Image (cartoon, rainbow, N blue to C red; front, top):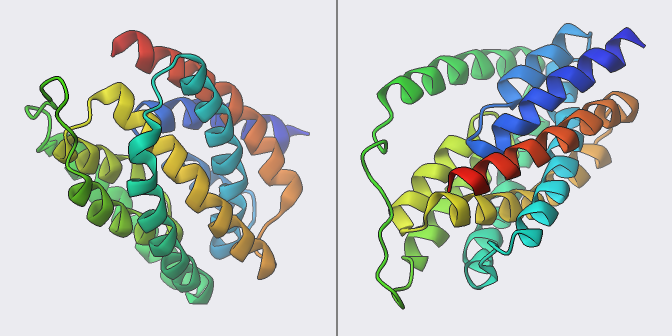
Amino acid sequence: MTDYLLLFGVGFVAGTLNVIAGGGSFLTLPLLIFLGLPATVANGTNRVGIFCQNVAAVWGFHRHGVVDWRYVVWAAVPATLGAGLGTWAAVAIGDAAFRRVLAFLMIAVTLWTLWDPFKKKQAFLEPGQRPNVAALAIGFFFVGIYGGFVQAGVGFLILATTTLAGLDLVRGNAVKVLSVLIYTALSLGLFAWQGKVVWDLGLALAVGTVAGSQVGVRFTVLKG
């Protein structure tokens, strides 16, 4: 019971962070490993929370009328293709290697956040001007590879991609959660097929991420 409560609490914080910007998996992945899961199984189990979180977040953004469905396909299709490649790599890698990769990424994303090369770049589109769909497609293909492999920190890569494509924060986040939802469905299925998902822990985590995602949606819409 203590494990489930801990997963719920950390999942709530992670779900909020993931919708607003990203980085929630840097909390949930180490927690799952701390609870005794092998690193690659923790990676797969984490996808349960990510998937459920994004189902709830998509519904939240849709209720607020900020989902621009025209551009979702330009992000979701290449992201899903990339996620297939990334997930196969994640399934094949050993636990020790994955731990080293996760440690490196935690350092890299921390430095990226401190540097934040996009903090001064804003998306200003004239009325009728279309976002750069080529930037969306290319960027989200690599987002999918990364997200399929580890997921942790993918939100920062997506923020960079949507900013370069010309989407504002609210619509960029709406495209983000839809795309992550679609490619995570594939990724979770592949992890489950390989027996790398512990469902009871994943569902306990998901209860927290779903609740947190609604806080994140509300904050994003109000801020945007």
